[in-house]
Amino acid sequence: MVAIATLQTIWDCRWSRLGYRVWGVQDHLQPEKLWVCIRSGEREGVTEEVCEACPHWESLPEPYFFNPSSRST
Ligand code: SF4
Image (cartoon, rainbow, N blue to C red; front, side, top):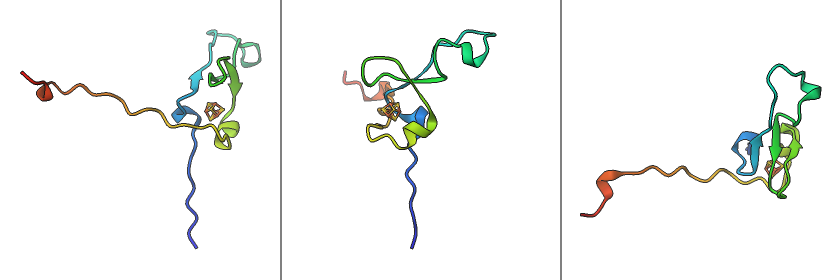
């Protein structure tokens, strides 16, 4: 039997953002955690462990690449 693990990484979720950090300030005094989730409309601190098991994880949208050769004349 082969088990396939699906990774829900915190940095690949469309709802995760880097938290606001203050340079030179100890971690426990930072205004936010390293990562925050904005899904609810609020900036809530999250950890990798939370996101690995989160039922609301969504992958990032595919990046848009402009292709000038596909332009119609
Ligand atoms: S808590 Fe869920 S929705 Fe929020 S960033 Fe993590 S995986 Fe995404």
